[in-house]
Length: 112
Image (spheres, rainbow, N blue to C red):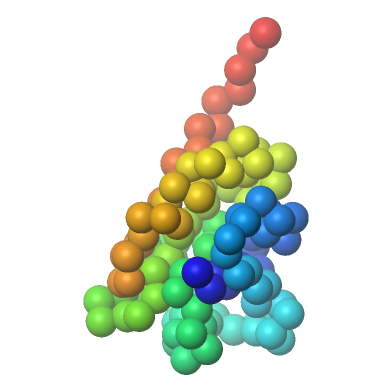
């Protein structure tokens, strides 16, 4: 699967998404593109999923008739995201064209 990482997704996450081709928006010179234009460009370039930590994107973008899906991460903190790699991979394996999915990440801290 071809995946585009939005600017707010830590690049270090890509090494854990084995079997997927991940590209950073910055690598394409797209770091200044706004969400609607970014999604349109990603579709033109054949990306299947946009991974973002922009929690407002679901309210800003209508995915009806889109060829791309969006996976929204509940945080952009790499250390936290690494605990959810299996969940992210599971979502990627089940996401469909035009879908918006969200990885819920609890902000509650565990006390020992």
